[in-house]
Length: 552
Length: 70
Ligand SMILES: Cc1cc2nc3c(=O)[nH]c(=O)nc-3n(C[C@H](O)[C@H](O)[C@H](O)COP(=O)(O)OP(=O)(O)OC[C@H]3O[C@@H](n4cnc5c(N)ncnc54)[C@H](O)[C@@H]3O)c2cc1C
Image (cartoon, rainbow over all chains, first blue to last red):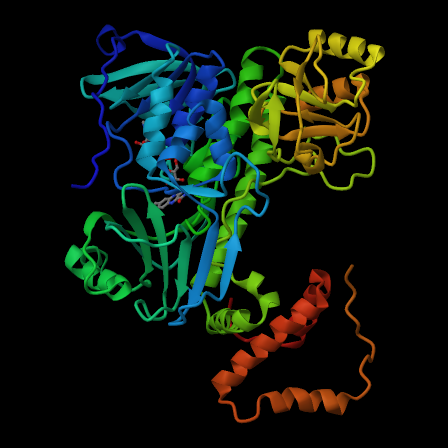
């Protein structure tokens, strides 16, 4: 039997009969993966959050299956990254095949740099992701999810929003200081605010079948261009947990969408691919057309867009939910500090600046992959086939092969929150880029660097054998007292009376951060680098903090 | 980087021209089309400079008037 994701009782709050206008600090519309992650992040920071979803069930079928390293690190900060990896199928290697050749024309490793906590990618059904997130939310008293609650109208102003919500027993009204619209690709919020969703639809269809069968196949992503079992088109195969396999068949534009998804029409395709004797059952079959679209502004007064409501990509590259989690990660600490009065609305504007850039780059990548996979003209087909034929013999051509450039975090090299390098660096992590991971020690325990930063600003400074100098210690203590969401982490061999210390016995952390004694990094609460220096100078750190809070 | 070499740069133009034409010997139009594409890709990799390729593409584009509507 196919797995049936949990469903929930529709909620009818007291305001429906009392007619009172309810009040909340943060309202999240949509309990998809991005709304749930946003609610969890803000909830863990102590804010009162209300999540509304018109549905009463987790995502049926399985939509997103591939979750990349960076989103896993975000989920780990939120408390369910390890659950994802435990249940999921980890993989790093992808192979690309052309026509009937059993040898790949090209293979890639998503995680060339090993010794990091999370793999390059895992595959897991979207409903598991939602379930694990909800399990964490249930531990919080300050977050409430209301199923069967549909937002039907919305007034936005400079100091809050007023929405009307429909329930099975009638409507009620709700006021919120901030609204985060995670209401998906067809975002009613976007429509209620009359906002455009510009971009393009690709004139092609993809038949997606999740089928269950037992097989010993490598845990790799396999992609075929023009295989004998789908001539002239592409096919993608991925393994999911519970012996479920995802198969994507490109099927072209002129098809009968109702006929093609009938099991009796899908079965011959699967048998042609996997052999006549394969025994399988269906979990889910559907047909998709893909879009690449983006809103012009991700923030409008007190309404903030995150996830599919703000941007859509084709699934080649698995950038949809993966990008959305990074929206949530970027937004939560900013909204938190604004609500605490430690930063002003300019910090929220930087969310728009950074995440709109990320959306643009994701769309660019996704559009290029789609153009390669489904060439739009005769000449692009000629070039595509030329690449595939030549790549096998000529390794220098292989990087032209584009079967989806898989989701990588987008850096913000020109973000207004960055303090640019003031000296020459030979490697390391540049301002505006998310941190690299490395094995470290905390006391005598092994740990990961990625788990030592995040939530608040962290000043990571490498100290030599002698530890901190007295004047450095005094200056750092002053700095920590002056700014609230900030702490210091020393990397070095000795214990310290005032600050937490990390050990770097393998030297990998220093190597990856291009660090020597006195090298200092300022990490933002989302684990991105705000600034870095070859020496510790607390007046420079204080200035970089102000900049990272959009204070100047 | 950048700057496409647009002054004469080859020792023997006839030799180079012949190598390109010979590559196509005995090919159908379709095969030739694909062979040209492969040649461009290999040479692009050899050049190794996006700006040079961009400049060359711009020259070819304006030198090849197209009557097809966008
Ligand atoms: C076939 C397929 C494969 C994919 N594969 C991948 C992948 O491998 N990796 C990846 O990263 N992404 C993938 N994606 C994309 C991924 O599924 C989406 O990006 C992700 O679901 C977006 O999450 P979201 O929370 O923004 O929106 P959604 O998941 O769409 O959630 C929106 C929620 O808002 C609710 N809602 C809408 N309107 C209202 C309203 N008026 N009032 C109250 N509630 C409302 C809806 O009920 C819904 O629960 C895939 C998508 C598809 C279709």
